[in-house]
Image (cartoon, rainbow, N blue to C red; front, side, top):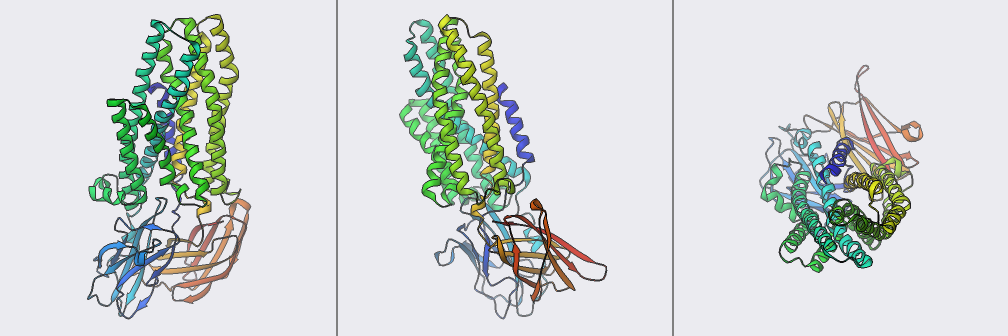
Length: 568
């Protein structure tokens, strides 16, 4: 098994390293109280952020600092008035005039994190000890953590495939094959015992792997959601915060299910209970992912469960053909060896054909719902991951078709002649190794896919922030749909946090590189200190637009920022 999986795991790790970073979360900040850049006469009682969808209020989601850099919020972050799309925190009493910086880091309903912040002033404002940029530094997740989380997700899928697909192979292929050939005698008894031992080892190993990856996944989610390292996320308090979220609840139940599977396989070997738990595990990806947060849920949830289950039957069955069946056939005479192999391959081929059909149909259903337009396939990271997955699946289907059209008839002929599998068996084994290797890469792509936001979930408005020389640029595009959009640009001094008003001329241009459109000059009107508005920005057709903001501060000096804006 190690020899077959090692190259595939290496390829999967390389793919994780070169893959693009996960896309921004679905949750988009729509408003805040007080408003960004607000100048107030008195200190508000609380700071509230309102988003475009439900968010988790955990991990110290909202923090407020005074101009000395001290925390002035009190208590834990909560959902004001019970609104799941808002999160806020109370401020200490007795606060005076000054500049206050509010930051947030929340987790959207499908477990993606998003962070940001703003500055507001009360009375006579001072200069903050730490800028918004400094307070937000280190709040992101490192590349190592992102890759590690991707590997954990991929191995979790592999564990589920080995366990659920392995059990399905034992019940739906091996046992009926034994009954069909009518094998009896000491050789067949030894073969049956050898298969049972190897299958139990694979299932138990999968359960241990699944439990370990689920436990690691809870820690990685704490690191991603809290913007910290994996080692700091080992803190029981952070793990407890994760368990209080939707993701944590589902993955906590998954951990208990894996532990129960391991106990049942070791102590009681109650296959019916094991099968029920594995069926539950096939549902957990849908409960913790996009399928449970997007509409129509009644379609996406079953489609995702069918997709995961059919994947498990296919991947787990190939693994059993490669790693468990040889242990049984080695105990048989050459003629019986070909008979057992031909019968198992024929039965699994029929089951795999149904599984592949269900896999393709359920995958297509999800893609149609989650992609907002056909162009999203090439224009978004989510769509490109689907294209990669489709290409890999096409290669796998080709290998399966070869086995079905070439290997199966030859094995049937050898079984009729009571001859050893010989070269045909060797060729089949090589093909299965290639299949299992490609399958591991497909699972890695799937792990990356679930970390990207589906285009259909990216409903406007869109917001982003970046550096513009000494200023911090916050840009909002509403509704981020093809056609006329309203664009707001806010400029803040990165050192003091106050509105940045040094620009003598500010110009904005838009480009759509994929269609070779642009530059389109957008008319930015000053709406206040450090605030510009573009009331009718014609951004069409759909695609990933690039917006260039140029701020001229003298006859010789100009600062430029580039923001990628997805228009759907």
